Structure formats: C-alpha cells, structure tokens
Length: 332
Image (cartoon, rainbow, N blue to C red):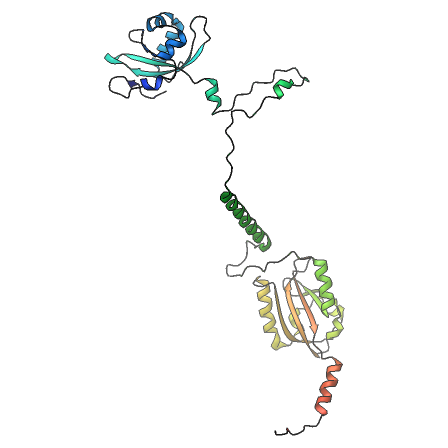
C-alpha cells in the first residue's frame, strides 16, 4: 500500500501494472466503478456498470474505511464475493482521480501458487486424535515444497573456507598451549610452548638422570629432596628448610640469583649452568644445575644437580699422560 495516493492525471500511470490480474477502479466520490480491465471482465463476466451494481454494501463500507484511514486501517485487503463465484482476495490502493475525486484500485492479490514459489506453505495444526498416527498420504507429502534451493559453494569458496578453518584451529591450539597468565609482567617473554608434561614420567627421568633433585618453594627454599645427596656431601635430612643459594659459595650466589629471577618472572621455562656446590663439611663439588618451574604439587620450582667428578679411568689416563717423557720433535 503506497503511503501517498497516486494520481491518474499528473502522477505515474498505474494502469499498465494491472493488466495481468483482474482489477477495477472504484470512484468513492461518485460511488461508481469508473474503469475495469479485461482480466476482470473475463473473470467476473460483468461490465463496469454490472460490477458496480453487484458490489455488496458491506464491501463499499470497507472501501470507505480504507479511504478515510489513508490506507492504513483495516480494509487494505478485502474479500470480493460476487454471486455464486468463490470469494477473491483483493488488495486496495489509494488513487486520486480527476476532479479531486478519491478512489481505490481494487486488484486481485497474488494466487497461492505464486506465493508458494517464494514462501513455504503454512502448516496446518495436527487435528488427528491423540495416539492416532498420521495417514500415509499426509506423510508422503514433501515438507520442503516451495523452499528456495540451498546455494552450493564453488570449489574456490570451499578451499578458502577450509583454509580459514585451519588457521582458526591453529590459533586456538597456540593460545591453549601458551596459557598466558593475566598477571604476567608487561616485559615478560611468552612461555615456551610444547606438548603436555607427564609429571610422573618427568619425575622418573629427573631421578634417573641427576644425582639430586631439590623441590623449592616460591622463595627458593628446599621443601624436599629426592636422589643421592651424599654424592655432593649432604645428608638428606639436613637439606629441607635450607635456602638453595646456601649450597653454593658466596661468589656463585649472585649468578644463582639471576637464574632464579628469570624463572620467577616466567621469562624462561628452565635455566642451566655449572657451579661449585659446597658439601655439608665445606668441600666443593663441580655440578651441572638445572633450575625450572614445577607446577605440579606443592613445589613451584625444582633444582636438579648432576656432579661432574672425573671418572677414575680418565684420571688414570691423565696420570699416564703426565708421566710420559717429552720427546723432541723430529725435523723433516
């Protein structure tokens, strides 16, 4: 329904659009049918004067309500029933006729078959009795009749879609493996990513590969120890409660403090270096140290020590080499 009435004199000519469906013009000022197209004469088998005489009074009142409401009230769509013919759904559109007369274009609405090509048919409520299965004829009806076909992707679009999916999945996996903490300092480096750590397997590897494994609290104080502390001159019961830095000489504690800072700020996963580790009696043993985070259990850090004592077979070779006489080099 147009918001403003059309004009048959100065406005766009609406008549060519009404030749494909039955339509007529009702001049409400004269209360007369002033124009009827060939489709309407063929459908109703009436002339303009005969159609005017056959219009019911109730329908004319609907015309009046539509004109007075500017086309926005009830009456913009009506049912036209003429004689024994079945009722016809008609739409109403305001029009301004010559001489300032007000009128309506009454045109048959689109038939159900035309509407079904754009919209799915409305389903009727199931009126069958409770417990009664629907008939086979109703079940055989195609429920999707009238729906538009689903558009298919071209091969190029499908490849682009799969590529985007792979990128999103890869980004999600990287984000899940990184597990960046929200309270990380601004200058901290991202965590080293890798496969999930099996702590039972990691513990077995640490205990077998190192002489001593110390588990430390957040202040790098020894909570417990595993392994063979006697290899570096300590008793197991003497280590818990002692700061890990106290195992090193005074001039090595500054380097250990730098390692501890890197691990505590999560700049790296592990730090490693070689130190002289002091025993309980004061003797020093060269060791390889690995300091890292241990997020499983109550200990946030671990310190693994591997003594670097020279094997006896190498000592014998060194003694033999020292005892050999030095011969002068022969000239060519």
